[in-house]
Structure formats: structure tokens, C-alpha cells
Length: 379
Length: 155
Picture 1 (cartoon, rainbow over the protein chains, first blue to last red):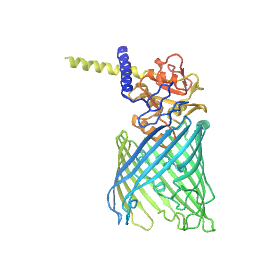
Picture 2: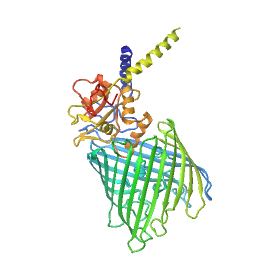
Picture 3: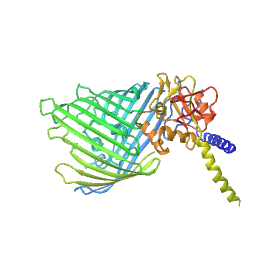
Picture 4: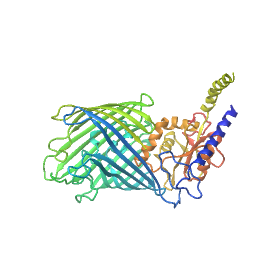
């Protein structure tokens, strides 16, 4: 037996020699520090004192969908999902850059009259961050607003999320909550007696003229939006996360009266697979600056999934959105009572196939039934 | 006849080898300069899941993780991460994509390679077969216990 184990050790060493002989030299390596390859799909970290340059890394996510619906005026067919490029670069041991670029197929993004179909390019995130330590990290840039779990957990990587579709309260291009935030963020985490408290404090431009957009090219008023977000991940319940956030802004949209905005949100998550559970709630309160009616709009969803076999994970989500008629800022957000059920089949470590059924009821409209098939992957 | 002999050898050798494999303790090793001697299992998990990224403000954690199929990796995935190989890969892709971590773990192919890099990189931490820890490295206690002691959790 000892001989067998020694032979295994010799073979492991031989594999290491052969693999290192076959690999190109790492792009960034300190002269005096031996280097090791990074995990596949992962960027490396420059060594302390290294002056050879940033360690740039590019990864991608995409998906292809087939959609069929019994809703009047819709057509079944394939569509190209988002094509997303994610960049990360450790500039030094303490300074990092993160970027996310999306290409979204649209019917009106091309040229000509009427406009041809094409792709809309968007800088989703562009963040430069300085880490002092785990408790204090300061960053500037364009973020997915950290007042909601889904928005900051999955971003635009469909493959990362269990389901094919996102909850409608965080839909791409949606305006129920401000999806993007341009400004500065202080974040960190503390042990907090085993609760493992993570916090974010942000100051930024808030919503723009169009309420679904952030103020990328500058704020539309002299009021900065601010947010506080905190969640705990207790040591004693591995995989469990509980958190909430507050967001405050003064919104001055075009076409409707401006309003003071308060958003309160809560989430509870189990980031394991047997079962996986995500539930979120958000209340958006608008107080018109001209003294109109105060309105409260609510949205929530609860999603559960269970890994029944190494490759299969069925799931179900119930979601609800209510926007009162008095909320003029969110008048384009349709109310919703919906159920989503499906199954995810992991084709390989980095690709998945999802079959999904959605039943959607909106105020004043007949129930719509929608079927999705999606293949999503990272590359 | 030769094939039968080979089959009999495999049937006898594999379970016996597995029994030996089950018995190994995985040691968490760092350089003596790392300002930590004892971590709870939850703290070790935080380090290897990239949630604790600094030993202190001047020393960043560099994770060194054995390549797939190594016995030490299987133990760590099972006991520490509580993940399958696929879940572990998705976890780190997601972690970097969320901008929670600037980098993922570095891969080491042997215990010797892990040890060599821990000696060379300030703040590096690795898990190695406890029987193969050379002098000059610090073995961290986990829940107050060293490898080989009764109740050591990474076994």
C-alpha cells in the first residue's frame, strides 16, 4: 500500500511537471516570487511590489432563448439573449477594476427608417476599488444598485441564476427600483460576533430624467441619492443571508411632477441547493414635491429550488407587483401576479439548459401563459 | 488469467487505498509571519471562500488550492465548502463576477508546490497532507486542534 501511495505522489509530481512545461509563462509574475496558475476562468493577482502591469482578465456570459406565448400580438421564436463581457483587473494588491459590458438585441437598435434590428451596447458596471482591509473598501463608478439581492448577485449572467427569467421587480430596463447607481460606495464586512455583517454605504446621482436610467452623464438635480445596505451571514447557519436596505433620492423626471423617493427593501436567502431559497420585498414611497398624493408601491417574490440530481434542479417562483394609480413615476410599471416553474439541466460545468413556464396576470388583461427554453453559459 | 489477476488486484487495492485516504488529515499552513495561530472552522471557511481577504491591512490572503482529483481537495470541498466540484467552480466565477473578489484561488498541483509557494508568497495559505508539512511553516489550529488530534475537523 505504501508503494501504491508513493507511486501516486510520483505521478502527481510528473503531472505537475508536464502541465507546467506545456503552459505559457504567466503574464504577470514577480521576478523573485514563484507563481502558480490561477483557477480556470479566474484572474491572477500581481505580487507585492510588482510593476509589470495590471493582470487583466476577460470572461463572458450569454444565452439563447426560445419563447412562445398565448398573448395576443406576440410571436413565438428564438431570440438572442444578452451577450455580456466581464472584465476584472487587479491593478495592485489593493486596487482593482471591475467592468461589465452588455450587448442586447433590440428591434429598434439598428439604422434606417423604420429602424432595423440591432444590438444596444451598455456599460453596465465600471468600478475602481481600493481595499484598505476587509472592513473598509472604497470605490467609484457605475454599479448595480446594492439595495436588492438579485441585482447584485447575478448581474447580467443568466447562467449564474437558477431560472431563465429574472423577477420582474429587477427586470432589465425596469424602473421599479433604480437598477444602476453612479457615484461612490464604501463597503466592508465585520465578524460581529459570528453574524458576519456586510455593509454598503453609497452616495450617487440617483435616477435620471428617464426613471429607469441612472444619471450617467451627470445628475439631473443638485440632490444626491444615498443608500445604506446591510446583511448578515451567521456562522451557525452556513449559506443563510438576511438583509435590508434604505435608499433615498429626489427624483425630477421629465413629463411628471418630481417626488422625494424612499425605498425600503428586505431579503432572505439560502445560498445552498438543497434547498435554495430567495425572497425579496421592496416598498417604493413617492412624495410629490408639489404636494400631491403620497403613494406606496410594493413588489416581492419568493423562489425555491432543489437540486434533485447532480444535473437537475427544478424551481418555482411566485411574484407580485402592485403600483397604485397615484404613483405617476412608476405608471409604466404594470401590476403583476405571476408564477414561474421550470427545471434547470446543467449540460456541463459551464453551461445549462432551462425549461420554464410562466403564468402572468396583469390588471385588466387576460392571463398570459409563456413557455421559455434557454441555454445559458459562461465562456 | 492475467486479466483476472489484475481485476483481483484492483478490487483489493482500491478499497484499501480508499481506507488510507479517508484517514488523512489536511493541515492549513501559512508562513510564521501570518498573524494568526488558531481559527474556528467558520473562520477557515471564510478564508477559503474569499470572504476574509486580509490577514491584516498590510497582508492580503493568497489562496492556494490543490487541482481537482487530489485527496486533500476532496476533503476540503466536502468539509469546508460543502460543495461539489461544479458548485465550487460556479461559486468562484460568481464571486469574481459580483466584484466581491478581484481574483480566484491559485492552483497547485502537488503538496510540494503548495509548500514552496506558501514559503514564497506573503500571506499565502494552503491545505496540504498533514504528514507532508515541512519545518519552517506554521500549521494553524482549527477549532483549537492540530492535525492528528482527536476531533480535528479536516479529516
